[in-house]
Amino acid sequence: MASDADPDTTLWWLRRDRRLHDNPALVAAADADRLLPVSVFDPAHYGTAEYGGTNSFTYEKTGGRRTRFRIDSVADLRSRLRDRGSDLVVRTGDPASVLSTLADRVDADAVHVHTRPTPEERAVEERVEAALDAPLVRHWGHTLYHPADLPNGVSGVDDTYTPFRKSVESSASVRDPEPIPELPPRPSGVDPGVLPDAAALGVDTSPVDDRAALVFEGGETAALGRLDEYLWETDALREYKETRNGLLGRDYSSKFSPWLNEGCLSPRRVYAEIDEYEDRRVANDSTYWLRFELLWRDFFQFQFAKHGATFFTPGGIRHREIAWRDDPEAFERWRRGETGIPFVDAGMRELNATGYLSNRARQNVASFLANDLRIDWRTGAAYFETRLIDYDPASNYGNWAYVAGVGNDSRNRSFDVVWQAHRYDPDAEYVQRWVPELDGLSPEAAHEPWTLPDERRARLDYPAPMIDPETQYGD
Ligand SMILES: Cc1cc2nc3c(=O)[nH]c(=O)nc-3n(C[C@H](O)[C@H](O)[C@H](O)COP(=O)(O)OP(=O)(O)OC[C@H]3O[C@@H](n4cnc5c(N)ncnc54)[C@H](O)[C@@H]3O)c2cc1C
Figure 1 (cartoon, rainbow, N blue to C red):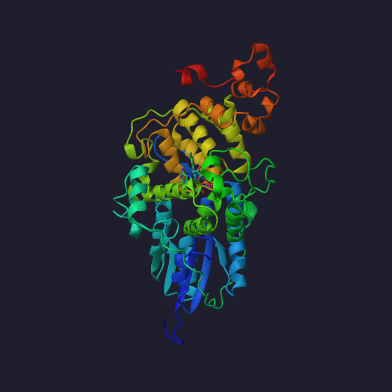
Figure 2: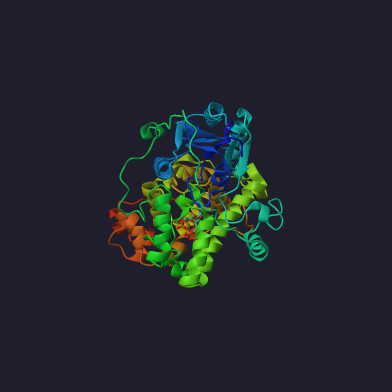
């Protein structure tokens, strides 16, 4: 550490790591005499963007619900830092110019940040690094396993999940979460700034739909509250393996994803808490299964570290030649939840109304767009990118590519969405919750309204299916 005459000053550049617990970048940055935590809202992430190449299209990068969750997360972190005698400097602008100006102002010796494996995030890091006089020190802090602990390194990660899982389970271990460090004082003379103007960033201020599975509140405080609730208060983890394909309610799955992806919750913290739950309550298939699912998250992060931008190409990492269709009208019906296939429409309407969707419903709506309509899967993924409150580039594009058959599985992932509807929504409760036009119908008819007599069908204010289910899903 430097002498008093020349205090060692660091910047902690916050990205999607909006937490104090288990934060390697913060731990390193706090090993200084003065620490300036900085969060930058980049307006480029809130407007529309162009998705290039064949079938290029524009889309909105960050929808209003995720923006609101993010602003709340920053506000919560600022208040947690203030409670510990520090503060959070907030700016809106280009990260390269904001950070280099602040680093010069406080004469920073280093800027600490969490790196990400996805191309756009990496490009921002490189631009910031080029603009800084001080070194940019990268840390890794958003997965269970640290890349340095992978048995064959990132380049040796298998492209299919099971061998990857077996290799880490047998030959690597998850590091313990980092404790919250003592926070050094802030350098003087820097205005903390105000949170960005929510309206200018396009925050959705509409009330959350009262059919939402859970009202997601941004921030570390709410994240730790949900962790406590899901494991200890409700004991729901005990049955996770049996309930995880659910469609309705608060506790069929953990709902940790928005907090994990915005960095309010560390996966290693979840892992450590599962250890404790296993010691104090029960260790069973369900406790294992939550780790198993968190490992899927790791898998996609390391896949993007390995393959980079190839994931975003139409044929994906398999370089498959598929003649994806460009059909704006069909896409629009899918997007609005007006395909005439109730299970698909329920999913899209839930997504539109809440920003969240169960894994089962995500798989079905994605498969319908990519495998039944054969529309460029990336348009669907981009739509999810806008809408999801828990969006993460690797998890989203990785899962979409997987479902569309251009990702980490060579098998045909095409779903019979009508079969899925009967299997996972046997009483049609989910479909009728989100597609009220089908109220009063039997479960059979609610899932397959096209089988009703013409005269009954005509009285429904609901479209005919845009594909022929018999041809599409018949044996
Ligand atoms: C087309 C499609 C797009 C998706 N996009 C995203 C996305 O942008 N962000 C995202 O976090 N998840 C995405 N998922 C994965 C999964 O649907 C969500 O992680 C899950 O539904 C979140 O709810 P939960 O936290 O209650 O999950 P739980 O069932 O409680 O699982 C616990 C955690 O494990 C992780 N996880 C579980 N399944 C997966 C998976 N298939 N891939 C990666 N991680 C997983 C998540 O971090 C999740 O929070 C997508 C899945 C599909 C099929």
